[in-house]
Length: 158
Image (cartoon, rainbow, N blue to C red; front, side, top):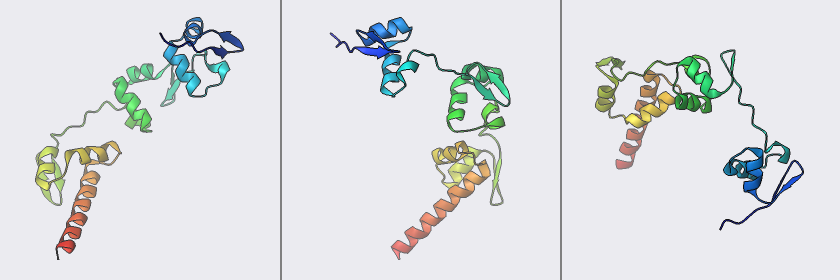
């Protein structure tokens, strides 16, 4: 049987967290989470203000903003957490791996082919793209790292 933790919210005593949550219209886990995060006791039962402003427009919540711009909700939240703003936040453009790329004067039919031929890790490339680098900048950084690592390997072999 779960133990009963008495709790006090807005100077009102409750016999248990479950009772407090029921009377405040919250899930028990939400009440416990807010108490554990150190929220003011008076704010535990309040519904947080979820309004969000994107590109000068106010929306009742993040889901409404994502829907307005036609961006998948989880994608939108991920972009917000990374601090993206403007077109980077609201863009619905797909990243195509079928685009041709020119690196150091050589043309590649796709990003995948280019990465394979240059020996660049797809995951590392994607990480730099997510950080906001252009595909060209990402390749330059990764090639630079690869070359400096090769120099170290040659020095240690000598």
